[in-house]
Image 1 (cartoon, rainbow, N blue to C red):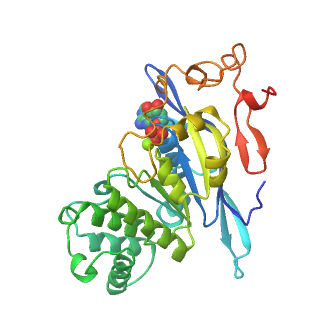
Image 2 (cartoon, rainbow, N blue to C red):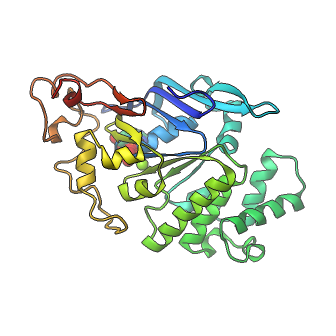
Image 3 (tube, rainbow, N blue to C red):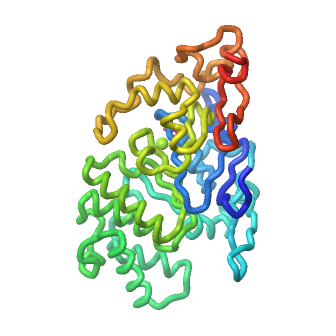
Length: 342
Ligand SMILES: Nc1ncnc2c1ncn2[C@@H]1O[C@H](COP(=O)(O)OP(=O)(O)O)[C@@H](O)[C@H]1O
Ligand SMILES: [Mg+2]
């Protein structure tokens, strides 16, 4: 295991379920992974595999009727004069509406989404909203908050920030709104930025610019990024480490090179085969895998991927859930092919 100086967030056996009238959706069903300080962890998987609910769980913003029913999420905060003292904060022990959790949300961990309009109020200017974010968390004058907002707008590449300070969200282009949302998320210099499909709705050129901006901001602020995407091309560009999710489970996790050059799980291998070409935005990447993600209310017994798996071992894969197997310290796979000597 990684030592605590390197680890920023540790997620152990997380289970987040939605209790619906029709039954229980096991949105996250035993996920274990770590986010390294200052690094990017990519989370990849088809739609409905539990990526967004994993992010919501870390921030404790899972909407009803969902809740975390098991597992531990630990944040390792660095403090002390030398910056070498690590204080573990057990996020899963904090009440979602507690002051401590509110302080973590926004200032230690912040989030950006696919749709930037949801981050902004339509009736206030971008600049006012950025400045207000600082004023809520720090005692600073209005003028100094304004200056910080303008500086951040400049850093994220918003042209003419003094003038655009007074722009309303709807007056900006999609790309500029995305930059503004990033500015908002970075205003308080978080240790972790969670980015949930932040470029999925953008054209290829704007996507490339936003990805470059995120890497630049990561370098200048030293923050970690949890980058959620269904796009392996984006993973290749952004991630240091990768978690592959299928139906609420982490089926494989390793460093980005092993994801592409030493993939183990048949689900990951199928995803890789379905990439048309890196840099081409088809809008339906990953669509080439045989079959569909099953109904979440009716998850198959055994390995959740077995009905779609070309290497399914009858009597094993359709009966027993595979354990997490560590092929190396940083390479985990949950698949019977590697436990049965197959
Ligand atoms: N608010 C909700 N109410 C009920 N079910 C939900 C809710 N949010 C997510 N789910 C279910 O949880 C599962 C995981 O969803 P999600 O994390 O959004 O997937 P992803 O982000 O990987 O596309 C899906 O089956 C989804 O239908
Ligand atoms: Mg999602």
